[in-house]
Amino acid sequence: MHITASVFINDAESGLHQDFIDWLEKNIPSNPGIYKHNKTGETNGDAHIKRQFMGREVVISITGGKFDFGPWEEIYYGEFDGQRKKRVLVKIIGE
Figure 1 (tube, rainbow, N blue to C red):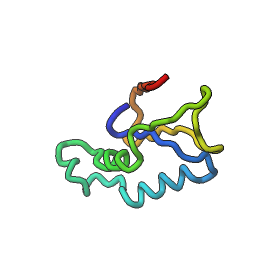
Figure 2: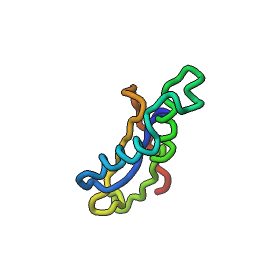
Figure 3: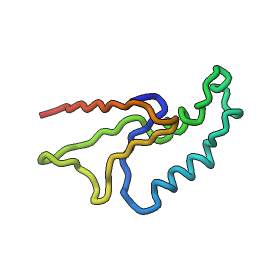
Figure 4: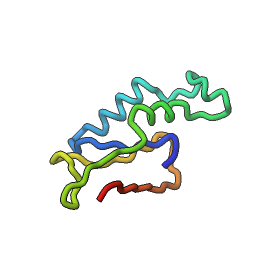
């Protein structure tokens, strides 16, 4: 959990993750000179925006002790600003 990482659900299909990476880099390039945020001394303006597009959390229904996923869906973690220590927070609401 940090502000330049993402958690999302999508299909585990061949090439799809690379398509995400390619789209993000084309539309939100890793070019420190174009982001106002980077004038603060940071160089990760693109990572903040990429995280915003990909999301920061997922909500999953559980039925009979199993995730209510489609047949190919999985949970993914996206890292947009280098490797950092991570922690996962799981909240269970309901019965």
